[in-house]
Length: 347
Image 1: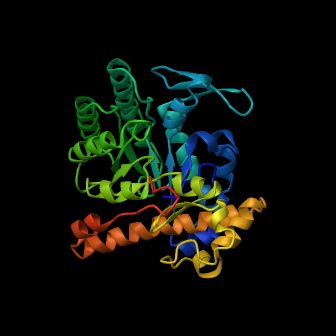
Image 2: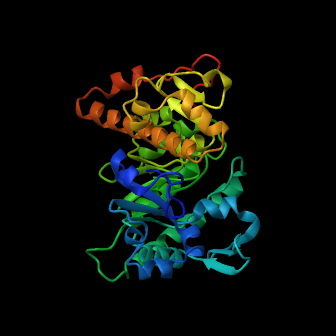
Image 3: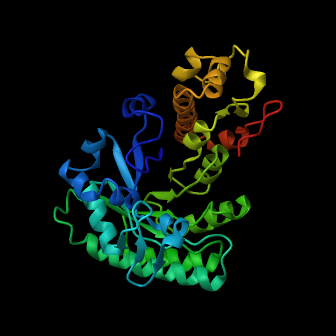
C-alpha cells in the first residue's frame, strides 16, 4: 500500500497511481483528523470522493504518532491526550474516537488504536503498552459494533504489539483472536530493531493468527523484506520507503539502489533501470533525471516516485504469480538485488 498520510501520496497524482495498478492506499487518522478534519471529509461523503480515489483505503489509527510525537502528549487508560503539532490545540484520541473518525473518513479497512513503543524499551514498558493496546482493541471492537449499517461498515483489524518479546507477542495475538477481527496486523516493528529480530517475530507471530484472515505487517519495508515476510505469512504491507527515497533521489533498480544525484549519471543515456517497463524508464534517461534533481525541478521527484512505486508493485505482482504457480520457494531463493558499482544495495 503506497502511503498517503494526509490523503495524498506525495509527488504523484491519483490517475498515475491507477495507471500503476495500485489497489489500495493508506491514510492516517491522526493527521486527517487534525487537517482538514474528519467532519470536512464527511461532508464530501468520505475520503474516496474527497481525494478522487476509487480504489480501497486503509486508515491507520494514529498509534504510530503516539510514539513519534510522544513529546506532545501523554498516554493514559482513556487514550492519547495531546496537543496538535499544527496549532497547539488540545485533543483526546480514544479508542472510540479513533473508530468514529475512521468511519467518518469512509475507510474500507480501519485499525484499532494501539500503543507502539520505540526500540529498545524495557520489558515492563513493552508489556504495559501491549496490554493497554489489548484493552483499547476491545473498546474499539465494542464501538465498531455500534456502527449503523452493519453490511456496509468497513473491515476492522486488530494490531498485535509486544516488541521483540515472543511471550508478549503471543499474549497479544491470542487476546486479539479471542476478541475477533476481520484481519490482524503486526505493529511495533521496523522501529530500530535488528532485521533478524523483525523476521523472527514476524515468523512466530503470524503463525498464531487465523490463516483465513489477512495478515498485515505495518511499516515494512525494503524490497527483500516483502519477499522474506510473505514467506513468513504476511499478506499486506505499507512503507514510506519507495516514495520517501524517491523524493531524495534514491532509486530502486533490479541491480541495486542508485543515488541519481551522483555526477557519474550526468551523461548516462540509460533508463533508471534497463530491466524496468515503467513509463519513466521507457522515456527518460538517468542523465535527464539527474539534471532535474540537481536543478531542483519538481518533475524529478515525481518521476522517481512513479518509478519506485512501479518497482515495488512489480515485486508484489511477481510474488503473487510465483505463489499461484507453486514456484514461490524458487522465486524467493533467486531474489537478490545487488549493488551497482559505487552505489548502495537495496536495504
